[in-house]
Amino acid sequence: MFLSRKTLSFFVLGVFLFGCAASTSQMGQRALKKGDYARAIAVLQKAVRENPHNAVALRDLGIAYFKKGNWQKAIVWLEKAHRQIPKDGATLFYLGASYEKNHQIKKAIQVYRQYTRLGRFSKTRQLVKAQLHVLLKKEMAQEIKQAVQNESALQTRQIPPNSVAVLYFKNVSDIAELKPLTKGLADMMITDLSQVHALQVVERARLQALMQEIGLGMSGLVDPKTAPKLGKLLGASRFVNGALVTLPGQKIQLDYSIARTQNARIEKTGDVNGSLRQIFSIEKKLVFDVIADMGIRLTEAERKAIQQIPTENLMAFIAYSRGLDYADRGKFDLAKKEFKRAVQLDPHFKKAQIGLAEVQISSGAVNAVDLAEPEVLATVDKTPQSSEQVSSDQTAKTPTVSSKESILVDRVTRSAQSVGVGFVPGVEQRKPVQESSGTEAAIGSARVNVNVPVPID
Image (cartoon, rainbow, N blue to C red):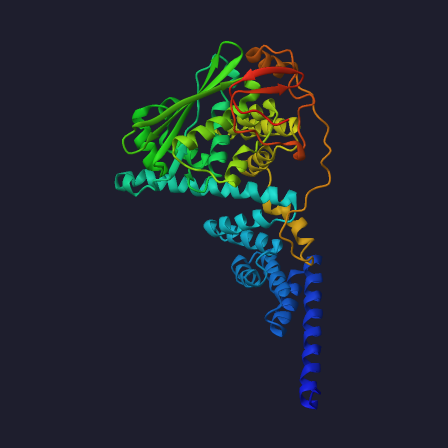
């Protein structure tokens, strides 16, 4: 089949125009990378006029406007690019940043969430996650303030029946050093329950915002009389209360209760116990018990997700828990120190890494967008990817643990074993715990019998 001379002429003209558009787009991108944003805008506008479907030119034009400080125009062009290349990390990053700069916090949160699922670089993704957490806290604080102001209009019958809040654990042990675990355990439990699709779990940050808004201390948090008020303001139909207790025979126990918001009636109670060294396994057993008490049937995927543990290093978890408490109280320097300590003890402890970045952002020490921007801008001409590139530097040395920290563990477990030495797992070694009981667990070279799920060797 032969083309007519007229058709052939149109075809050649189309190829020529497409080549010009591509060339113009590349010139605009070069100007963008050189920091000549005025020229980049002019050239990229021409590229878009030549080819309105040039997604790269649309994206780069939005970035150029972002760099010039025109957030509204940046949003317009980045939204157009996003519709064509929805999985492009650079587009999502600058679109989220533009919404944030334009004070459209809900939109920024929505876009940043997409980026954290598609982010290409571990460093940038971590910074964006931290920025997202900071924005979420601000949003939650505003929502809680409005809820408190309109408390009389809130109706408990409007609360979703599958919603649940986990309150901070109460430390009724005789070990003051374990007090930070009251928040760390609640944080860990909230993360695990959030894996269950049948539940709507209240974020820890929302609970903290409410406590600060109404001036509620830990004693008020565990007072049954305040439960209906808390549940109504948090939007939770149920709430879980817990307590950390030390027992004779080198053990600890986690007590829990599940109560209804509407009438504060306790539906279920229970407890799990074992060695402090196995606190992660104990917490998992508690979570599974709570889920069973609620009558929820887990899928295999949900079960496996819950069984994953964030760290196997006890002292890293205690440092992380201290960091949470300091950050809640606005003591960012102390929080930074504790999160750093947690990362030193376990370099693969992701929650501690994000906590560290978050307190730096909250304190104003860093700006997540400014820090991540050079890395993202350097990749705007690369093919979009939907998976995060993992850093090749995963060979951090195992840190040693101070004598003070060893004394803390020995004080509870009366064990001569050290904690931390040879006990910092790599990513591939972070095995899930078994959902079983009455198992003999191996810890180092010693063997002890506990009635809790244990790490798989």
